[in-house]
Each structure stands twice: as C-alpha cells, then as structure tokens.
Length: 248
Image 1 (cartoon, rainbow, N blue to C red):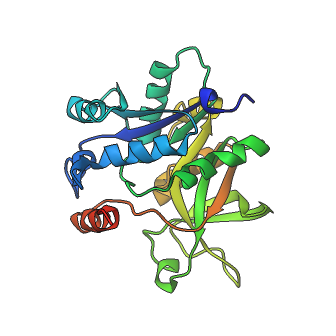
Image 2 (spheres, one colour):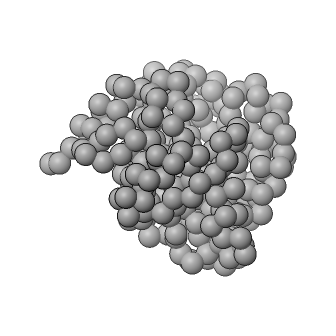
C-alpha cells in the first residue's frame, strides 16, 4: 500500500444542522470557528492533505478565510462517511490517496498525535479501517449508553482487533473496558465499499454506523490512546472547549 502524506487525505465533515447546537461548526472559540480549530490540529498532525467537506457555503467561506481548504458536497448525505467519500472523489479523482481519514468537525481540542495514531494500524496490518479507543477509568462511564464501548482482541502493543461495538456494558468479567473515539482511517477501497452498503441490522439497533462495516466482514483495528478528546454537542460542551482552548 502506498503511504505517506502524498497518499493520505484528512477530511473533516461539517454541516450546520445540529439539533442541540445549531450552527455548531462556526461556534466561536477564542475568536475562531470551531471547525477551523479542528483543521489546524489536523494540519499539525502532518499526515496528509487536509480539507473540510461541507454543504454550507458559510462554513466553506469561514474555512477558506482562515487559510484552509474546503470542498462543497451534497446536502442530502445520511452520514459523515458519505460526505467524506464524496469529498475524496472530488479532491482526488485519480485515486492517488489510498488512506482517507475522517476527523469529526466537533472535536476542536483533538491532539495531532491522536490523528496520527488513528492511521498507524493500516500501515502494519490487513485492516480495512482503523479507529481509536481509550481505557475507561470512570465507573459511571461503564454503564452509560452514550459511551460507546469497543470489544476487541489484543493483537499488539496498545492495539486491538475490533469484534463488536456496543452501548451496553461489555464484555462481561474482569478486565478493561474501552471507550470508542469516532475518528476513522479508511483504506479508500473499503470506504467506497462501505458507502455502497445499506444500513445493517445491528447498526440500526445500536445506532452505530461502524457495525455496518463489521457485519459486512470488514476488519477494524483499534489503536489505544491516553485520553478522550472533548466532543462538542451542547452549549455546556462548547463552554468547556472555550475554557480548554483559552490562551494560557
């Protein structure tokens, strides 16, 4: 597989619609839109070409005004993965990029190292896609259905092969539980295969898109990292992000 920055796209899907925080990508954090913070962290990761994929001209204008690349996509996508794939086809129609990272646009404090770690499993295994997880240390999180857990078999140092993702408390018995972080590194062919699939039975039951890939027989490897990046879904999350990212 070709590797290196010239063979990698980092795409940040962003849309204005958000039930709990309308206009979320443009929410002000320290004088800049949240999506710009994400783009800057993605650039600092130095893993490939970075672009924001959006159906909003307002978001695209803000991204370009900050010096980053934006690509316009359709407004009827059902998921971020669909938007990312359309953007990849527009940005790289010749298929030069064989790794495509999907970095969510609502994690402004994401560490560049976490972005780099998400792609590492693809360089040393036959995985179709890779993602991240953090060991759960808070007992309340173990039973919280909003915290998605990844169940996997260890295959290396701080590396799992995913067997299932669930909102339940699993697996049973002694041992660590892992909090899944929704940042994905795809092989291009796997992403193309994925977006052509219909939503699967378990995906719909758990409301977890990654189960579609597992149900279709794709291999997902999971790199373990040290901390969960703050995702901004509510006004309270936005205030926390502003505090975290405030000038020291």
